Image 1: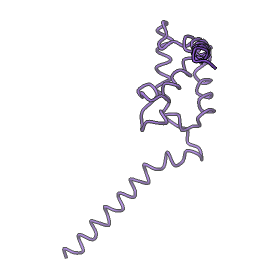
Image 2: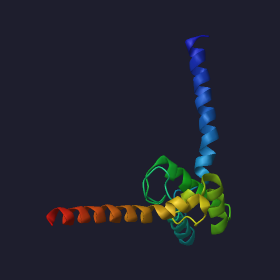
Image 3: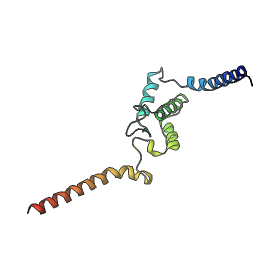
Image 4: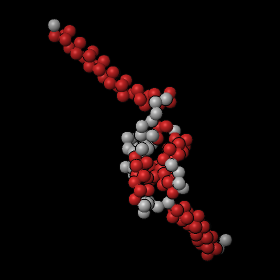
Length: 138
């Protein structure tokens, strides 16, 4: 194949890829012109956790994952889905861990119990240290 022919094939591939991607990008706006829809989108984005960042919600995070979730939320809102339907969609896709306030269920017990276990462990260590210090002083 000649170099000119290869350039034509590459140009055709680039045009096909751009034609395939452009409608998907244009369909979902970064911000809604309707203030109520924008407020709803931002509120929903704050309810979901970025699975890449530690402790950040999707609205605050700059990770590519969060960008994808923001786009999915906006697509669902544009499609007329309700907030519970959007939540169910994202939970079905990523699991309960995506929720900033996951429900208490057997799969999330560790999420809920870990802070208390760490606190109890820290208290136990502090108690042992104080006891040993008081024994050596006597």
